[in-house]
Amino acid sequence: MTERKLTTSKSHMPKDSFLFEKFVPASLIVMGIVMVGLILFAAGVLLGVVKF
Amino acid sequence: MSLNNVLPFLSTLVMLVFTISVLQRYVVRRQLHFLFWGIGLAMFGAGSFAEAYLALGWNKWVFFVWYLFGAALNAAWLGHGTLYLLVRKRWVHGVTAALVIGSLFAGYLMLQAMPKLDESVFTTSKPVSEQYGTKALDAGESAPEGALTVNTTYRGEEVTAVRGLLPLGTPVRLTTPFFNIYGLLTLVGGAIYSAFLFWRKRVMPNRVVANVLIAAGALAIGFASTLTRLGYGQFLYLGELFSAILMFVGFQLAAKPQPNEVPAQQSVPASAD
Image: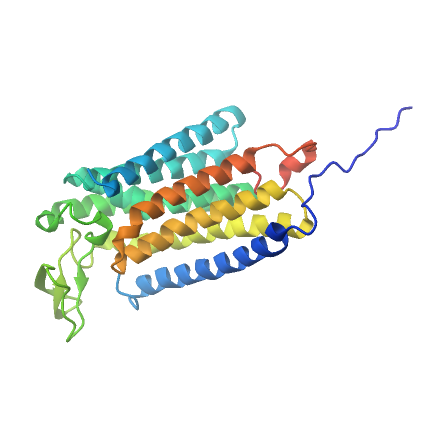
């Protein structure tokens, strides 16, 4: 019986990469904040608080 | 023809290639998220084209296309594609029904508004997104220099308003924030969530970057539109082109197979395969 070899062939992030260690988490946080800001702005328009 | 006249046509071209690419994937794979993305992208492209047209001259049906597809609906349909990709539950079909009915209702309201358009205020000297809405002025607030005003009754009060193409209190304008909130939550929120999942697991770096680009592209257009309404319309067309390119590059990057990628990974959320 042949045994199927399971390889860990996932593509991993490079270690000590500025892009993945610093830039990506920071940009996700900033974009999350901007998204919430835009949603609140749109909700303000809907409720008549913001004139648009 | 100025650069600002050319940019919306470039955005339209990018969106056309993007739409065809996504719909081709739907035809081959029959996965519904591609269909919704394709519809949303086609709406985005139609909106960009309408905007480009309205920078050169007036046509009320081009305005209809611009407002309904470009300003109101496209983000919601794009985001709905992301919802279909991330959530494989029955209730999503109910949301689809609500989106279709809501979109038809918005179309009906837009048709109702067409005979009431104040076409005399239209000018090609500024983007249509700076002139579509009539805005009531607060007591003591003065109108911007050169703006056309009208005295009218709004919600039982006599008000002075800066004239826009759509009259004050047009019902279709109330539907737009609903679609845009839903679109922001699902498209941007979905891309941020997907990028975070891959990042946390330390896998699929191309899809992390791809989702960051998609979220940034979607936010760029939202941000540019908001700036336009706050009086900084000079960034709108550039923002649209930037948004179209970022989302297109993000999608292409997400669709690119990883080296040694195993088939089981196809089911991981936010893949654009």
